[in-house]
Length: 374
Ligand code: SF4
Ligand code: SF4
Image (tube, rainbow, N blue to C red; front, top):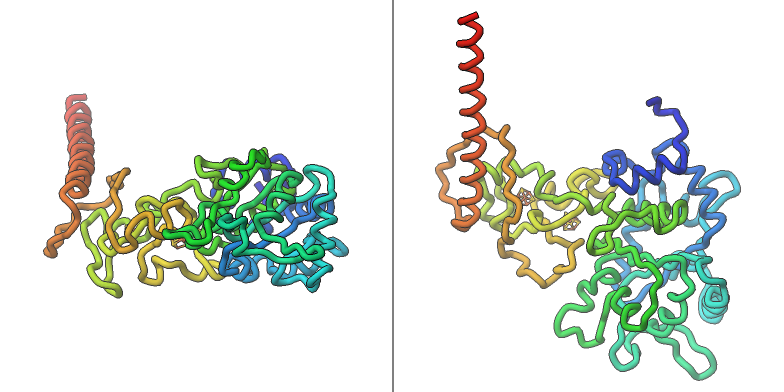
C-alpha cells in the first residue's frame, strides 16, 4: 500500500482496535489522513482536564509530546484554523479563579455525552474529600470528589490518565491517609456508569494519552479495544519481557547482579515478565531510550500492583517461559540465583527446543536416505 494513500476512518480505527504494529512504533499523526480525521472530530467534542491526587507528572509527560508537539495539540492548529477544543487544563489554560468555576458550571449544564473528561490523579474520598479541591461557590469549598460526581455522569467517556487515576497508584498506597481511590472505583461506588478508559503509567507515555483521546474523539468508546484492566490493547497488549532486548540474556541465564552490570535485570527485581506495554518498541523522549535501555529494571508502572503490591527489588514469578528455539544454548560459568522453579521451566523450554532440533535433524536424515534410495 502506498504511504501516500489516505486511510479511511474505518481502517484507522480498525488498526487501533487490533493494536496494530503500525501504532506500536509510530505516531498516529504520521498515518496519512489521521490528522484530518482528528481535526474533524475535535471540532465536535471538547475535552476537559482535571487533576486530583497527583504530582502533575502525567501532564508534564503529555507536555513533552514530540509528534505531534503539544503546542499543536493543545494550543496550535492541527489544520489551518482548527484547534483541539480544550475546555480547561490547569497547567496550560489562562483561566483562573471564578473563571474556572464558570467553565465547570457550563460543562455540568451540557447534555450527556457532549464532552470527554480526562482525569489525572486519584479522587480523595476520606472526610468528604476535604484533602483535595478547588473553587468556591459562596462560602462553600468544592472538593475534587464533588467535581467528579457532578461532571462524570454527563461525560461521553472518562480517560483516567496515569496509574493514580487508573488504579490508585502512589496516593492510594498504604496507609492511604486521604482515602485515595481510582476514578473507576469512585464511579462504581456511586452507580455512575460513564465508560472509563484507563491509560496507566507513572507517568503514561504522551503517545498513549494522545492516541487514546484521539481514538475516543474519532470513533467513540467502541473504537478502543481494552483489556481486563480497561487499558487500550493497542498500547498495553504485549508483555515487556517478550520484546525486551535482554530476553536472550534471560534465556541464557546471564543475569546482572548489581546495577550497572551487563545482563538481564530479572534478579534485580525487573517487572518486565508481568508488565504489559509497548515500551520496548515505543521508547521515551521521542523514541530515544527507555528504562531498561538505560540500565534499570522495569518497575511495572502500568500495572495495578504498582507501586507496592510487589516488592520493588524482588523477583516476580515467571508465568510464561516461552524461550525462543532460535537461541543457541550458552553455558555460563556464573552460578545463577534464579529459583529452581524458573530454571526448571527454562530447562523444560530448552529441552523442548532440543527435542524440536533433534526431530528436525531426524526428518532431514530420513529425507536424505529417501533421496538416495530414489
Ligand atoms: S526480566 Fe526484565 S531485563 Fe530481563 S529480559 Fe525480562 S524484561 Fe528484559
Ligand atoms: S518500562 Fe516499565 S517502568 Fe518503564 S514506563 Fe514502561 S512499564 Fe513503566
